[in-house]
Each structure stands twice: as C-alpha cells, then as structure tokens.
Image (tube, rainbow, N blue to C red):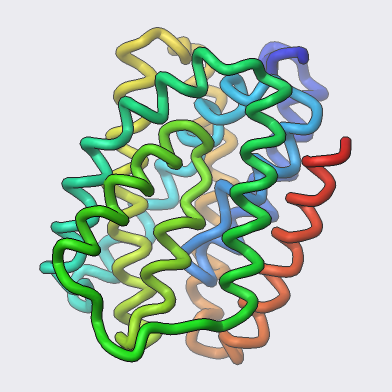
Length: 245
C-alpha cells in the first residue's frame, strides 16, 4: 500500500477535505473526528502513514476543545483511564509498526465497526463502574489507540456511563487531548513524522480546528442524540468500506 505523501498536492487536498468533515464531527460529539479521517484514508494508504498524520492534525482541536470542558471533567474517572491508557500505548504502537499494513487496515475496520454497533445499541451502565474497571478499560484503550488511533473503545465505555452527556463528553475530550499529545510525542521520538510533514499537518489542522469550533458551537443547539446516531451510522458505513475495499 502506498504511503500518504504530503509532498503530493492531491494527497494534501484529500487529507484537507477529510479533516474539515472530521473536525465538525469532533467538535460536536467530542469523538469520531480522527476515526472519520482514518476510515476514509486507510483503504488507500498504509495505516502507519495515515495514523501519524491524523494524530498531528487532531492535536490542534484539543487546544480549542479541552479548555471549555475543564469544569465538567470527572477528575477521578479521567485520572484512572488516562494513566492506564498511557501505559498501554507502547504495546499498541509496537503492533502497528510490526503487523502487515493490509491486515492492520482490516483490524482498524473491524474494531471501529464493532464498537460502533455497540454504541448504536444505546446500552448504558446503571451505575458507575469501579475504579479497577476504569483502569483495565483505560489500559486496553491505550493498546487499541496505539495500534489504530481509533478511540471508540474508550468512547463506548465513557458514553455508556450514567453521568450526564456534558460530563461524559468532557471526559472524552480531556482523555483524547492527553492521549493525542502523548501519541504524537512518541511518533516524533521514533522518527515516524518529519518536521515538514508536521508543518503541513498543522496547516491542515487549522481547517480542522475551525470546523471543530463550528461543531462545538452547535453542540447545545441541536438534538445531540439524533446527530450522534447519524455520526455512528456514518462510522459503520466507513468501517464496512474499509473492510471490503
């Protein structure tokens, strides 16, 4: 599979369009932005070349979204899932570097599709899970994030919480912000992204961030449940396409 080459104007255009659509989803729901880009691109480009650039683009959205959610974050929950997820990241990154790209494309599609189906079912916890469960889920989500940059596993868990939609969304955004910075730092240390590529991603990230702000502004003005289901069905279609293409 070819790499996503940011010296190619066509590839940059495709990535920018994907980022703009994904940014709106990210801003409104607090999740799904990276997944939209990844599921649109991995059928055509090597997964590792896509994941690192998506991580670089998504990092800007966190600067726009995280500050507005600080007051609503459940610090106990976020601390447990974030620290354990950071511990799981290296294991997932080892997988994405070592496994065949075609197989990884299929794995990404299957994980995204399975988690989407569960989220569409609307299942929720009746009471908040124990701290131990949060730690275990956090570690597993770190492994999955490192291998696929798909955060649906932790999103599925957090959005099933009995907490309010605002608190769940805040937890999702804060966790994603910390994990994104950690992941892109690891990619940079390993030499998986050059300074030129990072610069291009930052430029594309401006469109992504502007779109995320629009999505965030509309969050409280729209029936979130309806829009979320539309987003999840979009994810399911993209996951299915990624598996068969």
